[in-house]
Length: 203
Image 1 (cartoon, helix red, strand yellow):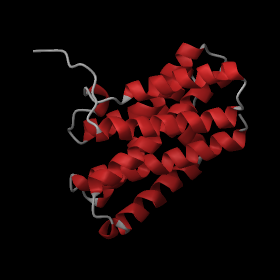
Image 2 (cartoon, rainbow, N blue to C red):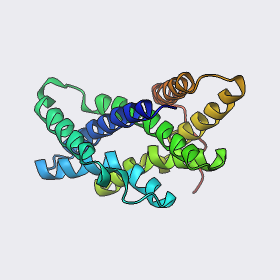
Image 3 (cartoon, rainbow, N blue to C red):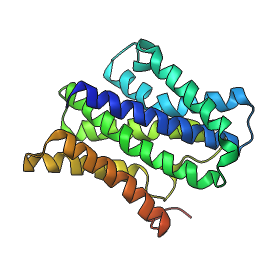
Image 4 (cartoon, rainbow, N blue to C red):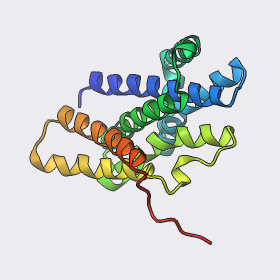
């Protein structure tokens, strides 16, 4: 995959998670500083954990301040246009689902760049896609989606498996990437719309 394509994915994923983090914080009626903090951790949380596991330090957002500026501008823009958005919950869900697909693919590609096995690459994709939301929900005193019976991390794992399966058909990486991102986003929308869940264990 060309570097320009990866940068595009990272930019779109950062914007998507910055918007979802901002809306999540506004739902909890945080002050502007709190909203910005939640937007930042949602956007950079997964990538930070991934880079630390890979030993790729300083982590990405420390090496390129443009990502911090992008998060700041996106969050401020979202706050400004909040009066034009009637359904916070729906908007949060759509942007979170899009960010999930984009960042999962980014994590997979980062693992491939480091020459790691497909299983580890899928794990890195799942971490990149999910952990920003985990930190966000924890700070907002909410049980993270990844720990619900709702299909969330599973969508990342299935997307990763699909990506490596497509490699056997000699599909261009850019095409395979688009297919996987669309798959993860669509799967999230479908399972939430039809209330499909994984089995729940416990008393």
